[in-house]
Amino acid sequence: SFSECTADIDGGGMYVRKGGDVALESARFVECTSGSQAALYIDAVERLALTNSQFVDNIASQTPAALFFTSSVATSGSLLRNTTFFGNSAPGNITILAASPLTWDCPLGYWMPNVGQLFGDLSGCNRLCAEGHYGNASDHFTSDCSGPCWLGHFCPEGSVLPRKCPAGTHMPNRRAANVSDCFPCAPGQYQPESGQEECLPCAAGSFSPNVGSAACEACPKGGVCEDAGAASRLVWQPCPAGSFNPNRGSSSSAACELCPIGTASAAPGAEGSETCSPCDPGHFAATPGLSKCERCSAG
Image (cartoon, rainbow, N blue to C red; front, side):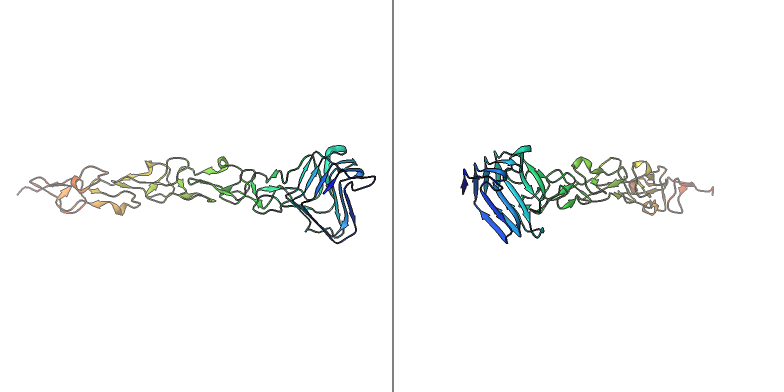
């Protein structure tokens, strides 16, 4: 613990220059005063590990107030974990100056810059991963974090993992930020699953009249819908007179069943065989699928 320490030069509490690895755990720098820079001045070491430490009410006549760091190897590997900075004072309100990479151990969904100046009080990582991106690691140092959101997903600010666009929608682009960015399926399309890049056309025999459908509607009985991607039941074509179709979702005229010999049906779009009426006395139907019975010849 370094309390009420004073130095006329850099490092009001501690000064280290040209060494190997420096590791400090549970260190406290409280009310230290530097005539130059920083309560803790670390210069040209290889790596720094600063864990579970506190910097409180330190004063420096030059920036930064609390921590100055530079590495002789200037590579990754230096780390700040669970360390806080409160009430420190220096010109420009600059608390930390990292001239070499100093990575923060962040909660998922957060990031902190690993080089440059940091200002004011700091209780750990305080920057959320940017909207349209996600962060599922603890060492991010740009707002892009782990990268852009996935296709079929959206990522609000601070996302740990992408979230799926709901059924009935799709997302063909990366970097979607909100569920409202997910595109609803157009009429004639559907999407039964969440987290999808594209919508699907309704199959022949079905249609989808609404925006954002998770399923298509089967075409009615009594006819057929031959076209895929139908947006309206207006594509429905009735079975011709002399035939019927008791099934929904038919896509071919072959689904229309012919009235049997000896019967006829004048109504198009019939749903059942009960519309096929037997011929009256003196009339006949010699072939299936007739719309009316023929009169028998005299004699």
